[in-house]
Length: 154
Image 1: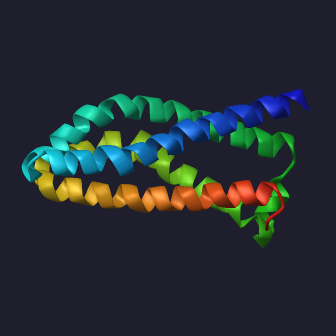
Image 2: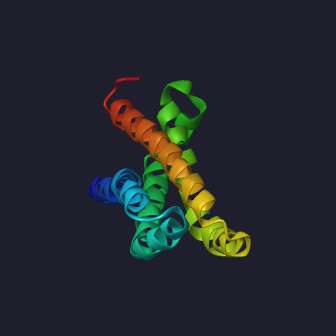
């Protein structure tokens, strides 16, 4: 059981730093960039700040995914994915998959090059800010569902 406790600690701390970072970027950094820079400079200003967070986010997302997978495997909880009352497990995996795809595939392989080619920084920043809000909302729903679900709310 000690391994399971350690995995849960790793999982919770990883999610704390990952989603907490997303919340900070979405609710503090992006509005500050929006109000403090002209539209054509916002994207560059954001990338200067976000460049320090992305490598950390990759670590937290990997740790959250690995610990979640390990707990599901070790606890033999695969059948929960067949039970609708464990909807929050699906939500956690879905949010994790979106962030993993963004951080490891879409952003480094496609998104940055696309933004450089199209050169519409004001529009790209506005879209990115909107996407961050949607992802933060989905993350909060998954997180609230997981905390409530693990304690028997659902």
